Image (cartoon, rainbow, N blue to C red; front, side, top):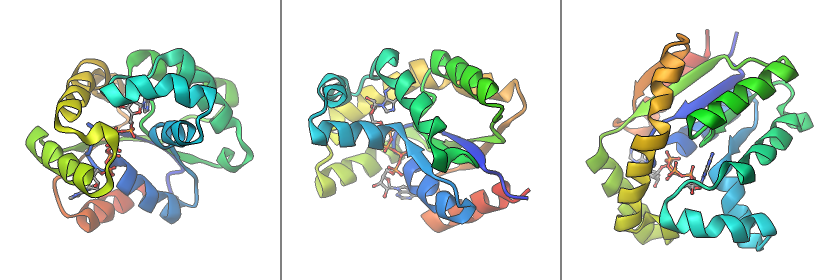
Length: 190
Ligand code: AP5
């Protein structure tokens, strides 16, 4: 059997997006990234994008009232009926509780939560490099440091939240991309 409903946790730059893309192809389920959805909204200049940009540029979380309906709709879409890989959601305890409620209503429990572990200095180096190469506006060093701080305060408590439910698996994300992917493939093939 292959896991079809998986949540990625981990600090900014841990490799969630990189690995979620690989696993999405491997497991034949959509990769749902709230960061990607928000960046597309900013690029398109939608109402959501206009409201979200201020928070994203500062490395702060976008308020829950802008995120929760968006994720409910995305998880209800036809292509998500048989599974998904969530990357960047949930980001705080309130979002995790909301996710529990909607998955309960839909009768679609998640199978597994993967935490990608990467030391801060590796993260700062990775994101600063991406900032130079791709010009992502929240990859400036001061914003990266704030994203890490926000992660510690708001998102890291989710590790305990999911560990208490015995659904958390930790993977060392400070290894070559292919090595991390190989470990993850073993985890999803239960
Ligand atoms: P989001 O897009 O989710 O940003 P993030 O969590 O900061 O994630 P990143 O995309 O920077 O990191 P990643 O872990 O996905 O790593 P990646 O694979 O890209 O969110 C952006 C913003 O949107 C937030 O700050 C917030 O404002 C808002 N937002 C999003 N979701 C929200 C929510 N639910 N609630 C409220 N606000 C929300 O890799 C990073 C780099 O490292 C790449 O260059 C990659 O090539 C490289 N890399 C990856 N793996 C390796 C490896 N093993 N070795 C060497 N390099 C690697």
